[in-house]
Image (cartoon, rainbow, N blue to C red; front, side):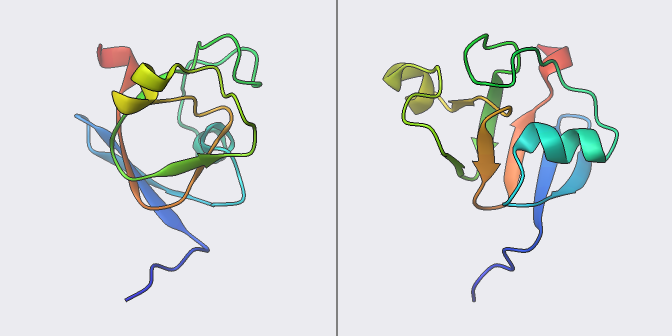
Length: 97
């Protein structure tokens, strides 16, 4: 069964907050449209203020180098300001680290 790509679910743990994200918008844009606060600054993938721990799911980037090392990517870190959701996602709440 194929997933409906017009809307994807993003769950923020451990609080369990869920929202709908568009694969056509960055995660930060989808979060902000629904009133979710997330740390952000440059919105270009360089400052790393928005770095998030992706617990499950997949994102894509439209830039070749999104400001993360290969090791950080392997550890599940993403940059929501330049990341586009590909599947449903589960993210760790950045304020509870």
